[in-house]
Length: 397
Figure 1 (cartoon, rainbow, N blue to C red):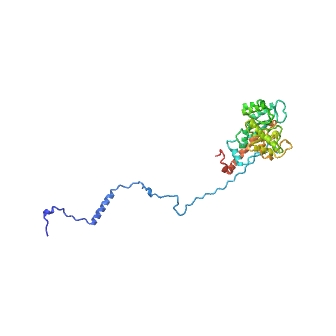
Figure 2: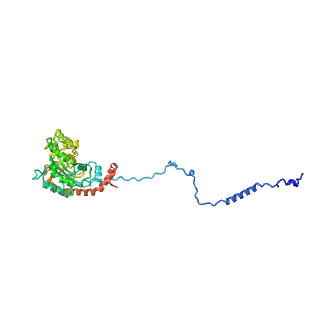
Figure 3: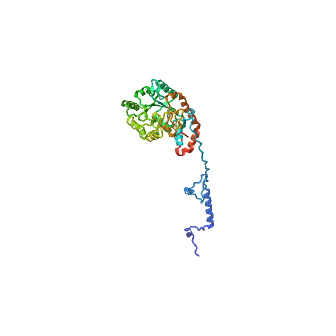
């Protein structure tokens, strides 16, 4: 055995034994414990969930059984109220009853309660004049000039305002807005220009009142008369409307087609040539009418017609008519069988106006009150029956 010298031992490090596995395990545990004790304390910051970890939702149910659908309680159908009847005026003759002329109740109600239309109870008094004379009138359709002026003044005092044919047609068909108390002033037959200048111009200039002239387009009319009336028409305050062609012709169901065509179509032709307009109204000459004349007039485009039957005033969808001949009033031809109130409108005679003026005014007032009484029921009816197809009532919440 060789011994290592002291000098040799200085050139080599001293021998140290390797630690055992157990020793290394214990040391590692101590190191981990020390490092853990050096970590910061936990805070209350909520944990952040990565978007990729969020639950995925789709429109397709994940469960094999569909989610329960909430049930809706079925509403019972609404029952519309009964429509009230037409207003009945106590001032009409018992044989004269108001007739409606609109078939569509929904269109009627929509026009009746539209706030942009004429108010319920708007009443129109239609008056016919023939001659305005300085002496005693020769017939019931004539009037003394003093009485004529008194009549016009009384109408104004009672709140009436005059309207023309276009205004009347629009009111009767669509309830277009007109003065609540309106008057239609009609002077029948041909007249010289000075007739209108003396009797009507002051009311036009002071009140804006037009006058309607029932004009027969007689072939032998003097050119000067045509020229004077054309000038008045062009001014806009004398509103000429048809009174046939041949003076003295009374149309009826016995009239031939030739006569009806001459009187109705012939008047349209003359108006278009002379007045540059198509007449809207036929003022039945002599008050004669019938089913065939009315039908012929309709086919030619006339929209209203005037009789000489003074049954009362008119309102929207409200025209007094009679079905029977009255022995006490034999000159009043029954209009009911014609079934066209707009083509058989009533007119007052001059001598009747002052006697019935209050009645006409009160008729409008009572009709307005009757409408207001039934307004809720009529609006409910419209809401249930009409609104789904005709749209909501204008102006209603």
